[in-house]
Amino acid sequence: MTAVVEELAPDPLPAALIRAASARFGLPGEARIEFMRHGENTTYGITAPDGRRFALRINRPGYQTPDAIRSEIAWMESLRRSGVRTPVAVAGVDGDPLQNATSAEGWSRTAVLFEWVDGVPLSGVDDVQPWARLGALMARIHVLTRAWTPPAWFTRPAWDGEALVGDEPRWGPPDPERRLAPADRAALEACRAEVRTRLDAIGTGADRFGLIHSDLAFENVLVADDGEVVIIDFDDSGYGWYLHELAVVLYPHEGTGGFGERRDALVDGYRGVRELPDGWLELPTFLMARRIQTLGWLFSRADTAHAQAQRARRLASTPKAAREYLAWANEHPV
Image (cartoon, rainbow, N blue to C red; front, side, top):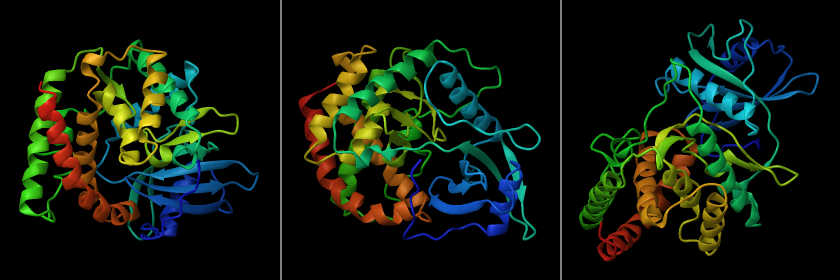
């Protein structure tokens, strides 16, 4: 895991709460704590006096239920048993990996502690080869998970058409403050309808829809010193399209000079492990779905540095992207 220092949003939580959370995992009071990131959750790097390193995640209230968080950890453990490297969740003082921390000021949050994973974020690596390794790892995870029988209490949300581009998407509407000009907003809404139609046509058959990580972007894909690709932060995992998994990691690079090379390496790596039929290789649709989804996030998570830094640029690039997608859709009818 690589520490990301937020430049636009300060640590939103009191130090006493963070100390209380780390104590729930038996970490001593003299452990060094470093604020890393305030995004969907708030994450801290912790170094124990004996040199052991951890990532402490303070969960955003109301985002995932306790059962969903325990399900996230159960899936990660199942992958690790099958040979996929995932961060190890540390048991708290009572044996539960999910702990509740409170402070004297009245703050209360749930927390999870993971063993630290070293690596460089994929976005900071110029070599295209890790993209092929990531594609193969994605496919391997999808194959393993399809064969896995989750515990009876397992629950994770669905990233289906309604959650991504529906009338009440999980991360909120893409332009709630009406920042876009009327014609641009109309184009975006036309994209929303087109994406929903195409997702419905693709369907949710077991060959294309299942349990996915769903957030393999930015700092969640690490390249280790030995070149191995490691994925972290399964907090957004849920049931969705396997193509959504590919689109999520590609979307931040859309429009860049190396996009095509990265896309081809990712797809080739995936296809080296698992079939990805051309008939439903609709990456433009899933890239647009990701754009619409994350536009909502940029408004609903306005308290985060990432949203503050990205919103203006993402809104500015959307009208052109929307019209290009509608032209592509017109040339490729369902």
